[in-house]
Image (cartoon, rainbow, N blue to C red; front, side, top):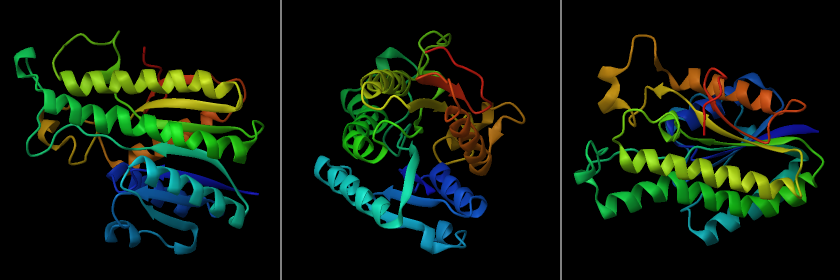
Length: 256
């Protein structure tokens, strides 16, 4: 039976690179991509075998999340593939009206709600909806891994600089939601592992305003990050790995 990879938030630069890399380098793997929008032309031009990519649109409402999960179950059965890697790429740092806070005086209620919605609430709801699919599909016996895109800045122990309140706290919340889910999932899916993945500073619109301060050699391409993430996923599928880990792009462990 062939493998399948589920990429949620697939229109992000890391999501696109992950999809392109799986299809280019894993000749039998299927990819299911979930996004608010259609597959971008920038990705379509990189995909050599369109038959191995299924793109599903979702507005991230509870109803559409449930519908996507149901469609995934049907597709996996039709193609006779095993879903063993799931990656949730949703995240938000800034936009035209939101910037990271430098001081506590900069805190804003609407900004906190918006950042937590993207970085913690949406990934947590995916973890909720995916449980039904994975219990049916994996039956507690097949190794699999779920990864979320976290950030080192979400580490409470590693916080030595302060600032960036909403982003920092929302990633901490994401880590806690992931770790708590891992404990519950283990009761019925003992072979499932969880990763909070720190990609490093990636050359995407998310980091663009803050790249001046990045040390030389520490600004990574989305392709590099995708390769690093796939390596961490493979490591997690090995025997006797931790139930949940907070890990950087290079495989180093980050304190929760």
